Image (cartoon, rainbow, N blue to C red):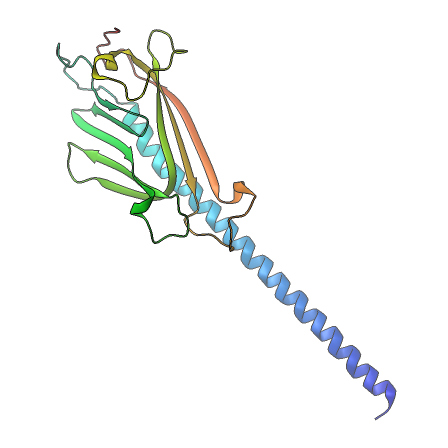
Length: 204
């Protein structure tokens, strides 16, 4: 076997090895891209599911509610992590759970979002939420923030409500979450006003 033949074999082996490495790399990149796309798609889908439900409840706050002197508004609880109110004659409660309730995921911060009707069995929404918060503003002056928890005597002062939600991927794709937070985090924020037409507001 001549030296030329040996060199040809070595060259072919090296070329094949390089092509194999390139193929494996391309396959890994395609797999990572698919994983990233799916994770982002799930975040968007989960955020849409959560916000549609929440918005539908909030736009009906106080509907079909018969106010009394003792309870002039449909609001029952107004804290930074829980909002309870009547809509269409049903008592609806939204609150955020504790991270310890979902120990099986890689993300240490994800938690349930609870939606309860008429103090019944809570509907536990496991959508990758890491936070949900409510901020309440004064109905007469929307630049004034109501202290949380808002006392019962000041429920009539609540006007705009600022809702913020953060979702994250429940499972990490690498040993550590990437620095590019757009790949695994999603924020949603909205300010919704409590309608005067559906609540009897008695500012204090």
